[in-house]
Image: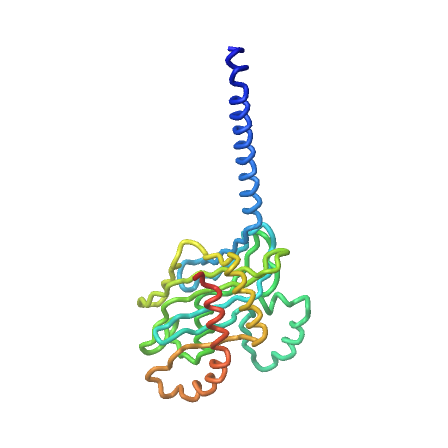
Length: 265
């Protein structure tokens, strides 16, 4: 036995070193996977409290570090076009005498009462209101008359997409996430179902370069909303279309860039 070992010492040494190398490679792979998992940004968009149109739109940060939320974009697809709006800030409806209250609320200590922009800690969450509130806000901006949760006339709402753009921890390039929800035109128009089981992450190098370019364009053009909506067979909306036409043309290119950058080719 000893003679056989001495005669095959070189072969045994080779296989021993190979085994040690494979063990270290496996250990290094585990370390890399653990590091990559901790550095991978993870934002989740989901329904909360309910499962229908009155559910809260919940945004959760499951990353290892904080994410600074820059933009929250709502994209409503209808049978007559698409409406896009920045819903990062809260929807403010003013009444007589609200000016003084608004001045008092504009202090630094109450900034979280006016906007959802800001850092979202690891394991933290926020909501952007109910899905029905988002639909009403989009419809009001476009001048669409609503009958409860559904639009009047033959117009139908088809999909509502929530898109996030933010900055993850100390990294320089932005990240993104999006999720679409299908709207069913049943009797009460209260059905809302996610198109996919999970939120789509926009974190590849190519996607993040596009998001960085999109953020710069949104900041430069002070993007708030844009529309590809067509007011078909609605003659009483001509004046509204004229007022929105200039805004839509000036921001249409920005809207297309934002949508393209947030979808993986």
